[in-house]
Length: 113
Image 1: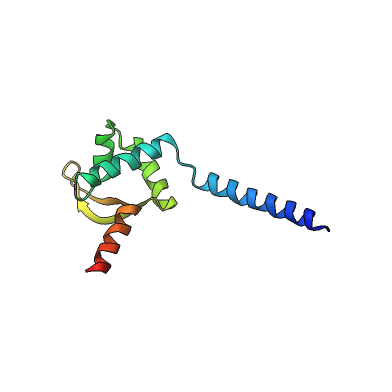
Image 2 (image 1 turned 30 degrees about the vertical axis):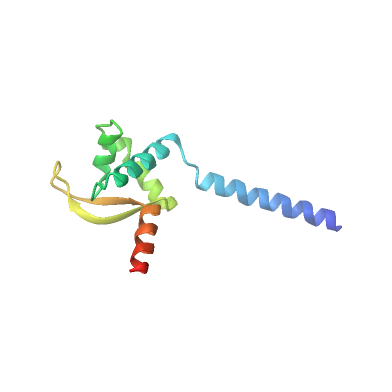
């Protein structure tokens, strides 16, 4: 096998890995909307951001409009779930959400103190 053949195999492998990464972290417009909304709420210093708050800020009344995408974003590592709080609407324990960027920033700030 020539060096050129090895280079072609490596290029194909790299392309396959890049394609796999693109598929496994495929951010849809709904994901982007949720991430943007979470970012805006975090910039406004809203504490204990819940699925319901994100749904409401996005203009949805049905929680299923955001919940599956939020779960996917957690699995992708884009969002981190935090403490549980009692939802004032449902009176049930619900998760709070934080962007990975926000968590990383808070950790850096804590290390500096």
